[in-house]
Length: 242
Image (cartoon, rainbow, N blue to C red):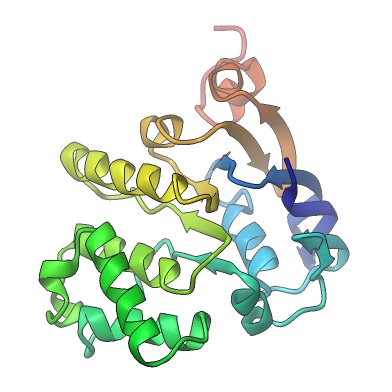
């Protein structure tokens, strides 16, 4: 299976604070990868490096076999990399539909009927079609999270980066979101998902990586990683001898 994303020795520091420490890992086409780590571990910074909003100090980032290390964020988006944000950031004064239309036209480069059709399909897929004409600023937290997902999908991504999209949701809301993400997986989109709601992550991903102080400390099958003494101590705050 082809590799869609590759980080090779990627590093980034702000003075004495290292947010990415020689990270090397790969994502296969159609795979869903979960990312765990304590607050401040550098998880979101890693997304910023992949999307191009943060420039790497060292290392190489490849997408679809192309070296994109020096590409702009806009070019990476048009090539097929889209993301959601931990804190939903819709255009609050615009409708739900208008928010997705911006993504379809600016991210996917569509116009006219093609853009409109994509937006309506994605809104249906994410459970927002009935809210299409609602002002985005008045949505509930669940629907703001869904809109984050919808906007990313309207950029027609090959790679979807999800940043704590399940955070703050009830169990029922989280279950609904998991079903939506599982449906997106079936379309062939590759996913990297940062999340603290571990049960949501385990319901979707094929593999886990764990980051601490910007460094990759574990990678592998999800349940094995969760039972690792090192991960239990660093991420879960449990004594490794327990």
